[in-house]
Length: 176
Image (cartoon, rainbow, N blue to C red; front, side):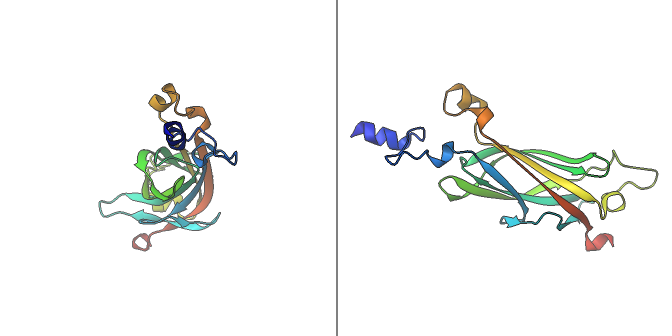
């Protein structure tokens, strides 16, 4: 009985039907938006460059992950497609809101915009430099830490998931 109980706690053990536990299946990531929940966005959709109360700008990203553990490392980058310049680069370690045993989401990630690499003379703000541009939002996530990998609990190199989506940078009404 003890062995059966231990097998149930170990996701590396296959169930009686021969299926691999969801936490060992290939993870997949979907990029969306939303401040308090995951909201899918379509390729090419407009996404507002929010003019924050402290004077900076950000774009709001969210992610949904399948076949994952509840804690992930996440890199969230935004590129200006025309120039190839990265305008936002953020690293997070987050606890997901779990929908099921092996799927969850994390909303409300700020992609803080830095357009210093695009500035030309007096043009130095996101609305001036990115309004109407196509931006590539990219996310990479991993639910296996280096210490878990070293302990043989997972293989970090096999737990990466990646997604990207093109969006149009829309102006915040305050910037119109």
